[in-house]
Length: 457
Ligand SMILES: [Zn+2]
Image (cartoon, rainbow, N blue to C red):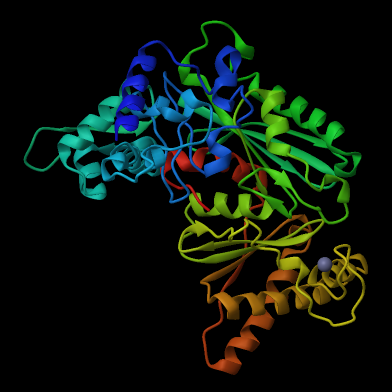
């Protein structure tokens, strides 16, 4: 309790003094942790903050959420340079310690409603109704969001029997994030605003096998080209409203999302153990979050409105799955969930780059290489059927450039397998659809989503 109070007091004191921004430029290193800690964002899946005070705050893995604004924003985390959270500030687990996190949670709820309301905006009364918060609490939160430049008036709307209500909207340009998709042979980078809309894009060839140093160089170059557009190149007097909140990086797994450390990426053993998140954070001076390409894409789809539980099967230069269960990305105990491509479906089958034999990925890619899209789809459908039976999900989404090269063949082939399995057990088949190929956009959501209470895993 005492420590929490102290942290809050400290936060308040720092806020007015323009605490270091998470937005790059001169103050950026504090958010990342000059002392070697890399941002709460990556570690806890929690979040950063926006606005003038703009430092980094963390919640626990329990989905704690971002802080935006002044008091809780700066947080014990920024000061200590390590990822600790208000929730855990009281070692004894004092109940009162939860209050700052709770306030942040409410703020995230309001921000998410502002985000989904779009340019039309939403009134305070509607915000209160939708969140269950009191009108007073909503007013307090919206006042803070407006003071921080995150929300603005979007006009007035007639209301029944009363004076016209002011509606509020999210200010898209109040914050930006960069999303990077590192594929085995290509790098795509996008700059998105707070709503997730792409406002800048770069694409270049990349050799993931060239090793960490060359790849980090390439990533820094592309990210720098994009971030220069919002952070004013670190120009003095840069406004808080163009804050760069961080960089999300998505690439083939397996990897440790919580620590931002790569494992033995199939075909590229030299990456095993490389601390990509910390290396990039040091190089770029902003918070960095690293996740598998499949998880990033699945998060992007969930944030964009795909509801319920679904599997996003990604067939590009490899095969993996992003799993969203009940609206949240399922990463598993060691953030290794979704290694869909290396399930063995043919004992003693052809060798796979992972060391096993008869993996779905090996069989599928071999069929693609032979020009047999129908057979590749049948293999993929079989594996998808296993997954559907195991998890009982609502929807199967297909993505990745191998799929988008022959979308009809894959949707038809996978659907046929699922239909047949469903018919045998007397159930309705789960629908199969093509999803937009948004790995880079999803990577940006690794940074943005926690701000809107969509922190996962
Ligand atoms: Zn394999």
